[in-house]
Length: 322
Image 1 (spheres, helix red, strand yellow):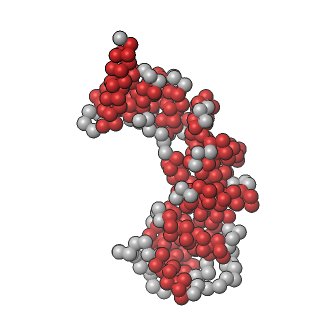
Image 2: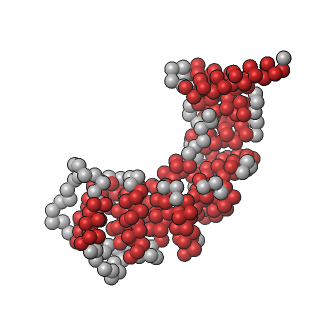
Image 3: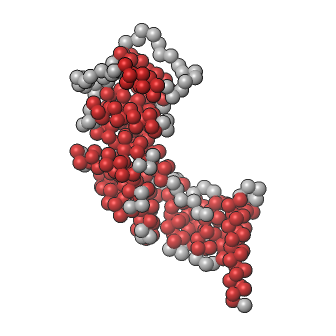
C-alpha cells in the first residue's frame, strides 16, 4: 500500500540535536553539587548496566587525568564514536560517581545507540540527583517516546516546557508524541508553537503536515508541505507526503509527479494506484500496479498483490454492472 514516511524518521533529527546539546551542557563545567556516593550494590548494578559491548571493548589510556579523559570522550562523542566515548566517561565515573553531567552524556549515548532501557535507567539516576536538569528530562522523554510510552513522554516534555517554554525542540517532540499517539489536534498546537520559535525546521513542518492529514485537512497539509519544499527542495519525504496529500484531493497527475520526485518510480506508480483503488477506479489502479511491476518485475511483490486485488474488484464491478 502507499508508504507513509514514518514518524520515526522525524526523530532522527532530534537524536542528532541531542549531541551538541549534551556537549554544550558539559562545556559549562559548573561544580558538581554535593550528593551521596553509590553503595557497593549500586556500583555493581551500574557496572553491569554499562557493559553494552562485552567483547572487544577498548580500554582507556592508563593514568590520564579526568579532564583529559573527558576531552577524549567529548571528541569521540562529537565524531559519533559512541563506544570510545562511553569507555572514557565510565573511567571517570569510577572515581567520580557523583558526576551527573557525565551520567547525562552516558544516558544520551545509550539513547542514540538504541539501548533504551539502559538510557532510561541512567537518565532517571541523573534526575534523582539533579531534578532541575531540563536536558535530562527532555532526553528521558525522547526515550519514552521511542518506547511508545506516550503518557510518560508527555509528562516529561510538559514538565520541561513548564519550566522554559522557549524550547522549540521540546515543542516539536511533544507534538510528535501527540501525533504518534493519535491526538493530531494537540500535535498541531505544539508543532505550531515549535514553528513560531523556529520557522525553518523542516522536520517540524513534515510532522505538522502529517497531523493535518490525520484530520483530513489535505489543503492545509499541502500548504505546509510547500513551505517545507522551499526550505528543502530535494527532501524525498516532502514529496512523498505531498503525493499523499494531493492524491487525497483527487489531484492524481500532480500526485504522481510528486511521488516520482520522492525517488522511486515503481513505488510512485504503486502509491498512485493505491489511491485510485481507494477511489473505486479499479481499471486505473490496475494499470498503475502493472506499470510498477514492469519497472521492477523480479521483486515487487507489493505491486503484484495490489494488482491482483484491483483485477478482482474490476471483475466484480463489471459482473455487477452486466
